[in-house]
Amino acid sequence: MFKRLIDQPAGEVTVVINGVAVKVPGNFSVAAAVLAHCGGATRTTPISGAPRAPYCMMGACFECLMEIDGVPNRQACLVQVTNGMRINRQRGASEVQA
Image (cartoon, rainbow, N blue to C red; front, side):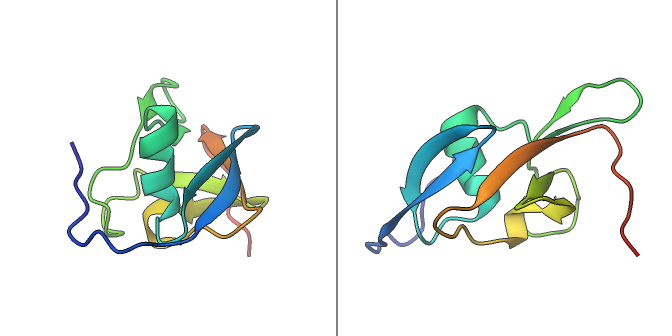
């Protein structure tokens, strides 16, 4: 479905996605890592609980909201992976931090 435009070598990093450690290229966004390793669901809707997945991959649609390193409501498509990052699916609505 997705294809890298430039196949430049990037060092691998280890991230933990929903409790499972996986190795991904260091130039991946969190959304790309989730799509590559977990089937893509990044959150569930607050009303029906239906799974949602990244759509636009550029920060416009907000379908990729996830909890990243303990911080909810992060747009996974705009965050680059880092070694040791902890990534979790966001379930329903999360409170906005002031």
